[in-house]
Amino acid sequence: MKLPRDLDGRELAIRLGVLGYIQDWQSGSHIICTTQTGGKHRLSIPEHAPLKAGTLSGILSKIESHFEISREALLRKLGF
Image 1 (cartoon, helix red, strand yellow):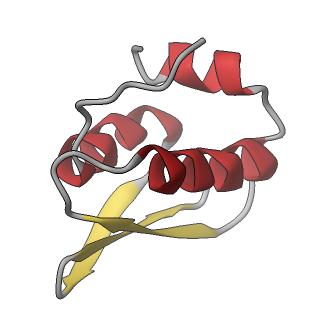
Image 2 (spheres, rainbow, N blue to C red):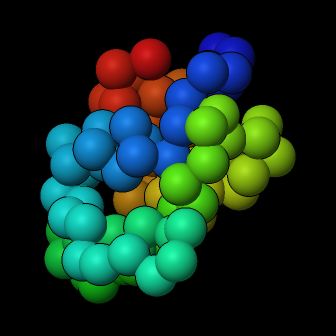
């Protein structure tokens, strides 16, 4: 499954809500999101439009590792 190319950081932070992530605060141009689901996990998401493919891939890899799910399953949960 291909990564979305037009996704911005704010939209990703909102979509992560389905996995229990909440937006804790913003530090400059980075949105800090945290979840308690499956143990505490914190992400820093740049508020860029659009997110670069490598940046998005790195963020998704961290989420995949935390929840122990595949990339395809994660993208489906996020609505892609």
